[in-house]
Image 1 (tube, rainbow, N blue to C red):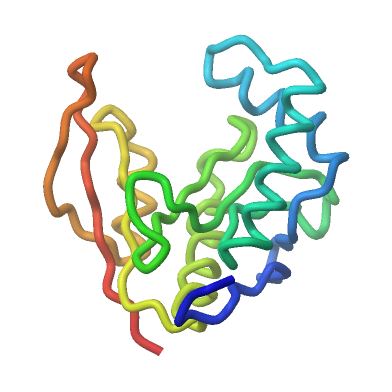
Image 2: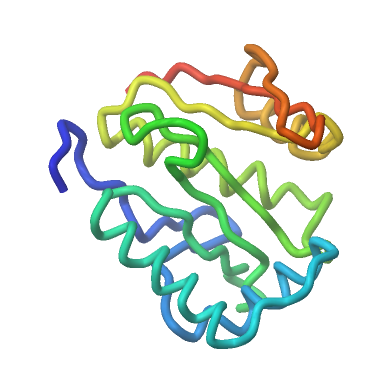
Length: 170
């Protein structure tokens, strides 16, 4: 990695959750999660390529999305982490997606709070989050973890994307 920032911690433990780097076996549940978006599930091979690409990108860039496992139940409930996305390696985006069965239980807030700490520990000063204007649940999570709305952009299909930002401090 050629950056002024240290590598993000790829193993994070919270009160109820554990997060770690992607493994090939994550392709199975990742397929299901993509299917919950209302789009066709990727094939197992496509999902495998995606999760291994996420792993390779983590090792190259020093930041990553991380699968989230509930510690007591042992099941995977989604992912959370840092991506370049619409932003930059210096000021990455926080991103999260959870299975519907895990919504409304504070897991996204808990995971995202831990990712913010991990991002601050790398020496970064600011994080972004871009969210479709329709996604009220994500806005609630972002508000709880200290993000504020900054501006909007629009996709070619007219969907409003709201840019949210949070300053970091160690």
